[in-house]
Amino acid sequence: MQISRSVLSGTKIAAVLAAGALALTACGGSSTPAASSDSGLKLINAGKLTVCSDVPYEPFEFQKDGKIVGFDMDIAAEIAKDVKAELNVVDSSFEAIETGTALTGCDVSISSISITDVRKNVMDFSNPYLDDDLTLVATSSSGINNLDGAKGKKVGVQQATTGAQYAKDKGIDAQQFEDSGLLVQALKAGTIDAAVGNGSVLGYAIKDDSNLKRVEDFATGEKLGISIKKGNTAMADAVNATLKRITDDGSMKKFETTWFGEASK
Image (cartoon, rainbow, N blue to C red; front, side, top):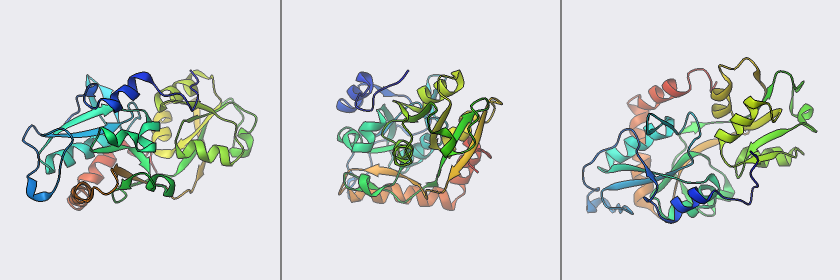
């Protein structure tokens, strides 16, 4: 199903405008009260860390057995634990996340967000937590061996992403999908010949499918970060403290191994 870049999901935009109304259960987190006031940290919903995320975006965030799980969700749970709050995940369109709209109803957005100068105009970012360049994957029958070979073919991207912008800059007239689930579904169904996106996500999606191949990687130097409302230094400090802790104690490496294995390399 092709979705126009200008169209947002009604369900997901509602989740942004009324954070918590469509909140989803996530693994991890704590039910203890909100962080103490001496930290200067204020949560939108008392006692809850409200996180906006574009679900599904495997292996970063997706539903399994009625819960939201994934690499980003493991990190979100650690942040919630450190600020002594319950983790509350709100499903948002990525376009709302990218433009900063999501942060009107969420404390942070965690959804495999590439740090860019354009995005820094409307939001602050945590320290980077993952390097994640772009890649081109294609069906084995497409005859596509590089990006030039994809021109004139049916290429898909997720709207509002750096992959979509990269394809456009390289002269690819790509079909745009609202989320990665629809993009991967179209790729596996053969309704598109190829897709451009982050290597972690597309590599994970095709790792067990012999009909799909990773044909070219692009060293774009992308780094993922957690977005925070501009000027919210208390939240930024709390998030960065958790990222440092889980990096130093080995938890981050454990999360990477659990969700990516060799797929991200």
